[in-house]
Image (tube, rainbow, N blue to C red):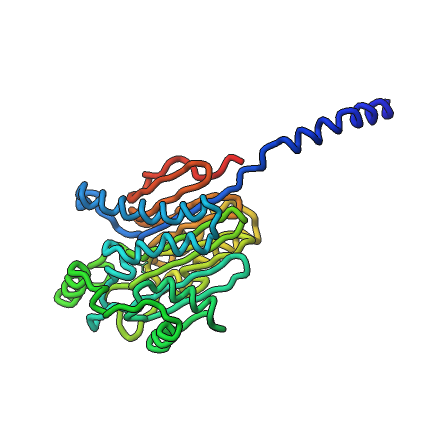
Length: 341
Ligand code: ASP
């Protein structure tokens, strides 16, 4: 009997081997998620025009990142390609359209991380760098450091030929009005903003590498050199090929205290539990401390996930499985972004 089975197996082998040779190569997966900030978004205050403008800006950023991935480019390039148009758009609190500090300036923070080798770069409090995400990446690739701040970061940018712009470029009337309202009525940043407009992107490329990036103007009326979570590796941004890539938006002080991005990746790596459950649990932890906001993440298997404890988050995701969506309020997402292969 045993011999018979061996004979049959041998007889079948060449056919099986041939079938394998003929089989088309497995389709390579890619995945991207983006955000343009979370917060108390009021459905009634969202006019159709405003909604269309946000959706178009999100779609532009999503498409730019997805194109890089679909063409076989790297997750790092996709993250930058998605973040740059959001930094350039006045709709988001990053680059042009950044919120104002108490002193009436715009001070920008950004960070980026490569999940392949966990190399990372970040800048805080820069005032003239047009696209802070590019400076953060240059810190990663062309310095021995992870984080540069203020005038030193600007000097590094000049040395490396990074595009700069007069500081007035970042100013928009809506953000200036928010600062004035805050000062006049002694309101908090949360009262005037109602939402966080930080931008971020996370990606998985066809080579299986993960990357994450985040860029922000911080919070309206920030003073004393306040820096939030966005430029802090482990708080606002983290990427590790072994677990996931995360970008956060929200009340930075709480994200710093929880170490949100690193916490999500570490829990995933240590437990192997579902990514959505872990992200939701970490966001619940932020809420328990009194903070709010949201995260986006992608996993090595291609899941593109959102988790937020606010009424909305400007967001989008696209995968090689054909998913492509942008959304604003809670509950607007398609059922699942989990790949079925
Ligand atoms: N997390 C940012 C900060 O605290 C704000 C935001 O997400 O918009 O600076």
